[in-house]
Structures are given as C-alpha cells and as structure tokens.
Length: 157
Image (cartoon, rainbow, N blue to C red; front, side):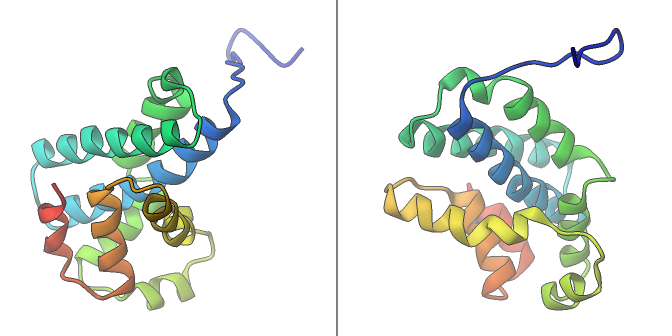
C-alpha cells in the first residue's frame, strides 16, 4: 500500500538493531563533523565510519540485534548518509565544535535537535554495562561533556 515506483519500503523485524543504528550513527556523524571541521582528510573520516560501524555492530549484537541489520539501509546506509551530508544536524554540530563553538551555546541556539548529543550519555552507559569498548563514541562524549580537545577524536582509534 505504501510502496510506489519512486519509493520502496524495506521492512525489517530487528527493532533492537534499528534502534542501535539510529542512535549511534548520529554520534559517528558528530565525530565525522569534528574531523571535517578540523580539516582532516577523508581517509580519516572513512576510518571513523568503518570503526563506527564496528562499534554499532558490537553493542547491537550484544543486545540481541541481527548482524544483517548493520549492513542494510538503516545501518550502513543511514550511517554513510548522516555522517557525510552537510545537511546532517549531527555532522554540522561536530563541525561547529571543531571551529571552537561551545556545545551549550550551539544547543541553546538550535531550533532542531541533534540526536547524537541527546543519546550519547545512554550509549556510553549501555557500552559500560555491557563491557563493550566504543572508543569513537567515548571520544565524542569526552569532547561534548568534559571539554576535551576536539583533536582528541583522532586518538579514539
């Protein structure tokens, strides 16, 4: 009923995987925005995407997600789009942080939510509870919540 020649639905029954992908791709997009804002090359952003997908998959599978979800549209597909598009609110947030703006100022003046910022604490808590190392997410957490130097994102992996 909802499909059309210009629009195709891709049903998926992995609610946990979709939720994990949706939350973590935004955090990885912030990391890519920071990297881009610092003027670091695309090879580094590619590495952030690759290792970010690995972090998503490790936590998701520990929580019961299906592996195939991470390589589908809601996993890799949405991750690449969100982390590489200059229309992405999360990527823009990362760029602004790299340019020296304070997170509190950015969040107070934005009219739309930056989901990565809003979910980061919960993702870090889940990773610790499940003993999953997530160095990129942890680096973004340190930058956003402990005022770590944005260049520290490079030390995440």
